[in-house]
Length: 386
Image (cartoon, rainbow, N blue to C red):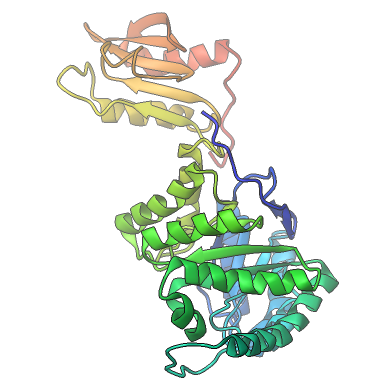
């Protein structure tokens, strides 16, 4: 089954692309303090080696923005190019302009970019809306020009928890308020002939995040970055993030993703790729299909599955099924390329697609599977990293 992916404008960030027909981009954010340049460099490189394709660096002040030059230079020297995003929030115009000199993308938060103290108003007049939009435009235009000068991207990153008071009063604490906030900034970019943008609408509550991105998908053609913010750590954080991200990806919505964990950010990368693999959007490892085991199982399934995985995990793109008995074998291994199916009498049958190839003793099962893969010309020796 192929998901009908939403067609978004292709946007370049460094040597990577998001949107268009490009693969879903995986990104993360370092946790080191930006002024600790060496620690930042090490964490960026660790993320890149783990498969992260775009790394965000917090940039709260001009001092941090000025550190980005050295951070980028050292990353390139020690590892090679890694696309970097400067994460800018409060009163962000001068910070973003400086950061734009050194990174591949500037992220701004519409709720904080032109910060206003709460006025506790119950309503905003059209004149007051116009006044606020004018203030935003004055602050945003220098950033737009800085991005245009170097040909870099801008991410308009809305967070549910930091909407401006004007949006909260006008639209409520709703997904619509998030969307209106993002599109107001996008409209200013368009007015000044700048279209190299992407948008994110994140929330810590999955239904709000899903609703906001569905609205954005209907109302704009820019790439969308997906994530459930402040998801926490451990298993629930992974489940929560998957619930939001995978739901939208399955609808064809989303061009770049991040699983936000309160852990080492390197841990986020494998979860991202597993979400993409589960949906058939990117294949980065062997796909293993296995039954849950029951009283019919003819061998210790967890042990055998580990043995098969260890022998074949480097064969990216193959689907291999490990099934405990003939009942769950040919019928339920779906479209696996190869099957390893338990049989009475201490034997297993190897399958190519749904066709049995040979039956061998269990103790030789993995060895014979490897021999079959070699005979079919799909085997490759594992690399040292595998």
